[in-house]
Length: 63
Image 1: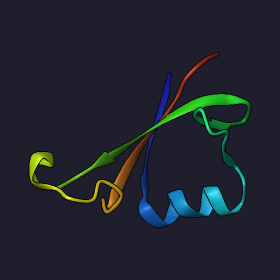
Image 2: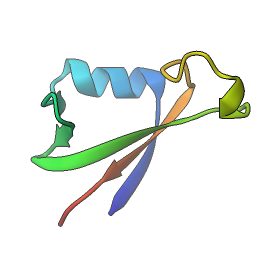
Image 3: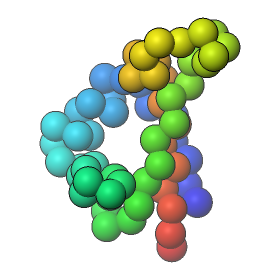
């Protein structure tokens, strides 16, 4: 599994450029499933909006 740390802007650009595709059942990048994890500066239990992180970890699954 490959991991990348991206800014919110970089992640949005990947979706806009259709490098990451939302299939409705998950996300695909280069025909591989990816997991997107929000990285927050504060304890997540106090967060209302998980989409408002500054950084995201992108985990590419598969071979």
